[in-house]
Length: 456
Image (cartoon, rainbow, N blue to C red; front, side, top):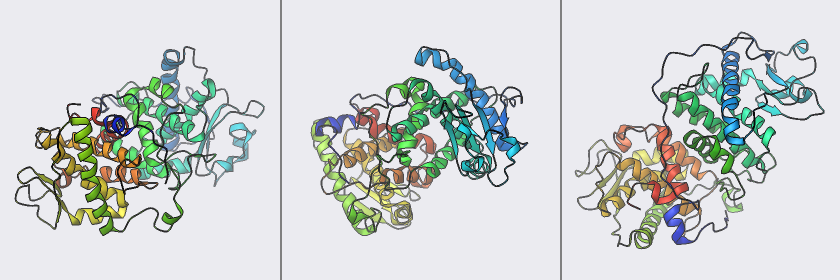
């Protein structure tokens, strides 16, 4: 996959993939108060809704979304928020009663067209313009698999499109869709902070919420220029977390032409393998790439020499210099990085870059140690994950020789952190949720070294 050079080598090493660097503050919900009450049926009318839990979740979310945007819209856009004029529609495409939808659903569409979908529609010459329609059976499946908040997240995304219908969308489909994800993240943080009357988001639900986004990504290899492109897993999760951390003003301002998207098409030679290198070749590639990156980083950013640690595999018990039950280790005594091949072979099932992510984290601990930063510091893992995001930005931007990121690789980083990063025997007791690990990785990828607490 060919990409234009986005920044000079020196600035890339310092700042990742944006021109403005800043420290990422990981968003977390505040303590949860009393359970919110359901929205009264008259507060939000949803045509076709029945007494199913998913309709209640959707109605509660829509009521709170109306309240959130009535509050935020004047500050963000300088005008009063105009409520949706076309209404809301709940459909079970497998059991449609036409009497429930005398003028169709959004923009007059046949209710059956909503199967496995939710959509906002604006077409002034059509019935039910400026409305949201959802397949309640589909949302119920999402809730069953990924938690009760996911239907609310879908409503928040579609409501983001309603906001765009009032102020304009950023242009290309991928920017429009990820900006709606960002708006959904801003609303979700407001809910998590206990400000919603009818919806609730617990800290323990955030990991499942990010896992649910995996179902909502575009197929790997989709062109970012595709007419209906929504973004890669990493693109969508990043946009959501950006809104969660920084609020709706960030969503307004950060989706211009200079926004970087990681979604891309496969080169012809990668179609058969879907961009995955054979395991043994991959380990060698990563083992060669990490010292190249860190040698350059030390020279250009830290004005120091780097002593590359060897990367050694083990099976079962870690070396004596590290806790025996740890799968990824750095030994300051001897300057050695170690990894349990049981972990990396399992992680390879997620994709080859999951393994690269795994190996990069203890290597980053070694880099921190050479900078005089204690690898046993409670925040060392947070910093190392962030530095792994920084390394991944350099690989993405073709600044590391002989290594080329393939479509979907950064999605595999997200999957690794959500699947394995939270396990104490992998990274130790970092006391970070999967949501937080992904957020600090994203911070390193987007903001570079300044986000990673390494004295830059």
